[in-house]
Length: 311
Image (cartoon, rainbow, N blue to C red; front, top):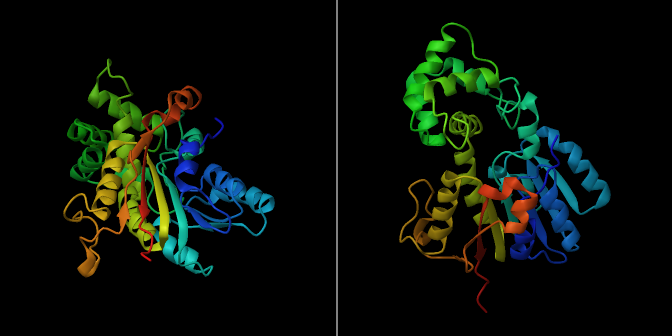
């Protein structure tokens, strides 16, 4: 298994600026790289959230290393308000979100996120609900095409969906290599830079885990939790996520003129900016980090800060 390396860790710390007695949320705990760095940077508290129950093992290490300063919460960061409220927390100084699938999840064939190693077609971050195999074998051809097109930006979505429906009529599709081969056969493209199955697997994973819906709710929750002067940092790994985060930050900082139709308005204050963006408002990984951590190649970090209370 590849050792997990947190992406853009130094950039995250530079923007978040952990301070003594501060309260922070690591909304996507994973192996705990962000949480550990925040705890080491200041004498603060961190509430770490993850929907994957297997991350509990990493959390136990931090609980022993930082007694009384670290709390792990099983759940989705979209529910961060209610999760931390159970611990009497209603306002925080900073929130970090490192989106997508962790390298650990990709490297575990049994989780079914990747076609690099054959495994059961699962893809569930929470290990609950419908699996990828359920969707692939039960969804209609139109539903599959929509998933691949809208969540994977796959131009050959209809051909792929048609090929899947034909293949499952012969035998259920239950393995990652099995699905990848069907997609490759439908797409072709021997000269593509990436594997022809990449976009479809991304679309299926996003759909299974409702990643965009969770992100939209999570961003609004972060907005509600941040104290005056509080900071938000979000790391995305593909253009669809980044566009959603960009639209959110720009709307909250008065750069769009109106809110996204996907995000609830705040009653009469819908167009009043309560946040501001740093300059530059986004960052990408440095050349030095790319040499050490190829996963950072597609990473984009966006930040915003709540305005401080006026004197």
